[in-house]
Image (cartoon, rainbow, N blue to C red):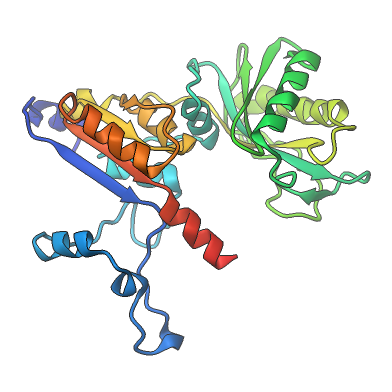
Length: 309
């Protein structure tokens, strides 16, 4: 990874264009038990990709390091030319940025999952049956009305898609070195958040009281009668794509997390795209105004998940 200070010196404005197409979740591992059967990409009907491959240089990238399978955040930072080991972006920040929220340096952003718990406090569904986005908005309105503040920290809830929401904590002395409350499995109780250092104890205490308060407020709103707090994070201090590479960049994506990450690195983000056809039209409409295009295809990942069950 080239040092940022050197990259800033080497980068120059020019008229060349870069189109980065990320087909999420596309893997091409041969299943040994299937013998000589073609891999998924060998079997797929993809004449345009095949044509590009025949006239291109092909290779493999290592997003972080050998043996490390990174999450979407670090992997995309690496694709954009940033050192993912230097910049640690929490999932809460990505979710917040993905729905267009401005998060101050002193704020804490949290990704929330509406969840279902039984009378004994045990989680029975980590996604509350994937409630509708409309129901999500109703619950967020209730929570904002009933909570609003815990001690000296203001609490704001924002609806995402289906079971996902964003929680913003605003106050003094909030640091993000705190564990999630999601045990990552049903049949277990919501975890108490734990501070990993002294400076984060206030945040852990507020998150614990917040988690308990949400259960109290939502007790009659089954199946979404709890929220699992994940990715508790302050925003990072990232240089923009233009600062580093002199690239005027735009994000053409449908999924909030990828739009959020793009926003954090200074890309222009088109907010209301819902499908691949709209993405293509957005690329055409903006082609003359930018020289770096991040085009994210989510459906390849979604279809793969559906096939896995």
